[in-house]
Image (cartoon, rainbow, N blue to C red; front, side, top):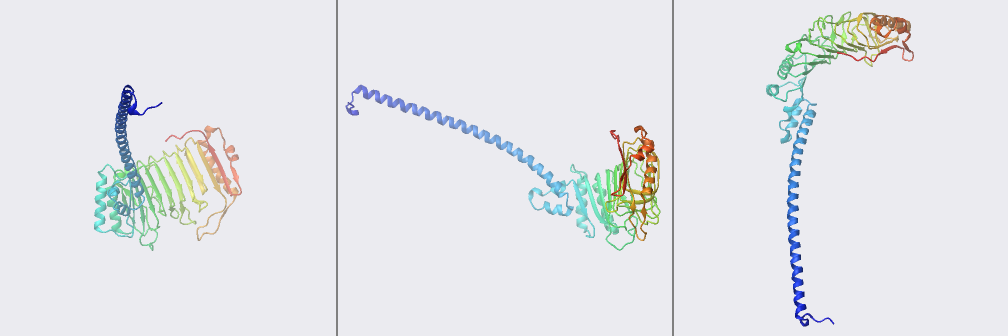
Length: 417
């Protein structure tokens, strides 16, 4: 029988009281242990948060730098004036326009106030001596406007960029061929790549001079330039290795001459859609290059094929020849190197007409005769393959649906520049 607590024996009451006190002490110990554990874990969490915050801050710095580089490249795609305006939109972008790897200056028909010119000159002068040097400068201006020519020449000199793109246009669209007058292009010392683009027949090929002539490695002519007799031969580019001529026109009866005298180190030549002014007096192409390794000749897709009066070739180190649908009444190949890649493609049928020329048709027999003449000139460079002229002629494919003849020869040899 269970008695009430006040009626229980004294010994039993003492034992119950000491048991209760023991349980209370144990509970207090457990509470202290939990509190100490919580403090320890809290400190660990704080340390982890500090470390994580440090990593996050470093990550933010890296991503910020990466983002600035990407933004600078994006702003390089628009004219410099718009890039400056974009840099004023927020505090972080304040000086981003001073980091653009490519600078695009558009002067054409807009005019430029004295303040804008001075501001641009200060920027170019600062960038020239800065670690963020301009890698590519593109200048678009009117070749027939003296003030714009002067501003462009000054900007080109101050930028001293390794890559220079000059886009010469005409404000007066009524000028005759060559009517923009003679002009010159002074290359600064660091120029290694030059692209000259025109959009009007009135613009002539400039006289290229300056300290950068000796360092120029790559030169591209692009646009409706009329190449008169001796214009290319007059260019003295001692270090030039790559030359591309696109969309230009040879003057009536003139010859486009590319020689070692003007370009002694020329290795790669590409001629694309170089047409003639007068089909009654088609121009000629003469290539005499001691160091030439590759030669590509092709028309534009719209032209179908191009007609020349004659083509002369002397390239004792030539390794690659790509002759695509270019017709000539006379082809003379004086010397080539050890050829590793050859493609000769000739078209026959109705030739493209240049007014007031009458339509002319080239027969398949005429195309076959020209193909045989070209292969005979290339034969010394193909003897290492053990092929004779008759074997080469038999390998010519007749693409009768397209009215073309095609001969392709390729070996496993690697090109050595």
